[in-house]
Image (cartoon, rainbow, N blue to C red; front, top):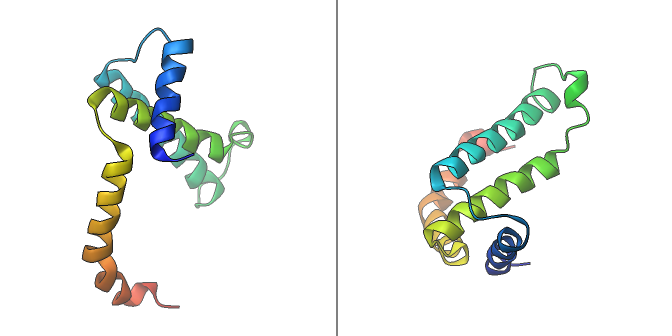
Amino acid sequence: MDLEGAQKKVDQWIKTHGVRYFDELTNMAQLTEEVGEVARIIARRYGEQSEKESDKSKNLGEELADVIFVAICIANQTGVDLHEAFEKKLKIKSYRDHERHQKNSKLKD
C-alpha cells in the first residue's frame, strides 16, 4: 500500500468505525503518547534500561503502526498529501545530507 492508499484507508476507517477525527491538538497528544510507547520499548529492549515484565509483551511493530496511524490522521485532517510531502523530503535529504553522511567518520566501519 502506498501513502495515498494509506491515507484513504485511514479516512475510510474513521468514517466507518469512528465518529469523527479527534481535533488536531488531541491527535498531537496521541501522537506524542504513541511515540513515547515506541521509545519505552526501544530503551528497554535495545538500550541499557532493564525490561519490565509488563513490557515484554509489547509489540514494537504495533506501536510503530500506531504512530503511523495517528500521523496519517493528522495529515488527513490538515490537508497534507503525505506522498507528495515524503517525495519532496527525500529529495531535500538526498541533496542536503549525501556528502554530510559520506564524510561522517562516526559512520565508517
